[in-house]
Image: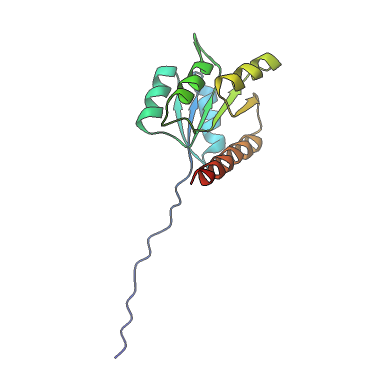
Length: 144
């Protein structure tokens, strides 16, 4: 007698890439979260202290940061990330309303991998984030 064993299939829930979005404006946080939620798991932070805690507790796959955070400067967070050996390879995008060439140069000098000016189309933002992830994967492959 032939016995057929049926195995319950667990649904495949591919883990979405995790993004930490740092901006002190709750409205902007909500818009970015809504724009990216179908492709990324988005966690938000409103201050540098909160962002540092999130980065060290559960490092994301990508970091998006505004430069102007009340009295704080998002470029300090970029420098913090680059100074931490465990975070050094974390892709960092600045998403800011600061748009001068000097602002962009300062962002890259602080360690940002990309600089996008607000307002931004959600599809453009998602495409840039996927590009940063692809570059990170290639870099990690080359390290092996």
